[in-house]
Image 1 (cartoon, one colour):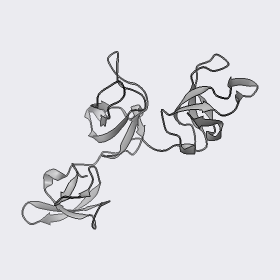
Image 2 (image 1 turned 180 degrees about the horizontal axis):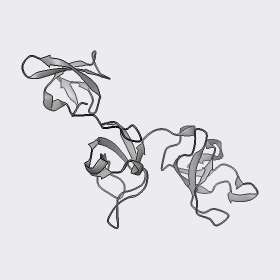
Image 3 (image 1 turned 60 degrees about the horizontal axis):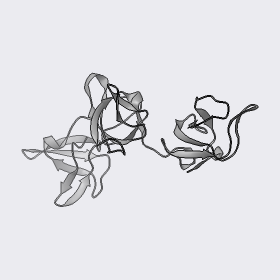
Image 4 (image 1 turned 90 degrees about the vertical axis):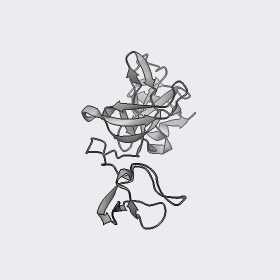
Length: 194
């Protein structure tokens, strides 16, 4: 993988983390690499060895270096929230003891920082069903019920936690009508963005 952004002159050709295959040595100090994606040209570039690094080992989420992720929960260092739930980050590479090193962006409460996390503590940053995203604030668009029990009335505020299945999302409402605190799985048409 590209260990950094690779330029030819002033033009960015290969982005940090892009996977590739070493083809051969080129001249005395370069290696010819065919990268999987290129921002300009064919993707075959002669690079110095220090422009390369090993790609991530297999991991449960199939994450690769340079991939955008989000904190799947509040990440704690001791008793302090070091990275709040929903904060975006970039995979930097493998960390110690099977962890993944991630550079998290600055949040409203914490400066940017690198942490070594376990795979369950992050998830790929992607658009979810209905165009929602993890940590997005939403409100109920209609009565949310489990059989005859009213869980949330229209306008009740909540937060998207993720996808439950390929047709349903997981949302935790600020205050459920039945007094419980558990998250609810529902269709994307049952909520709307705030």
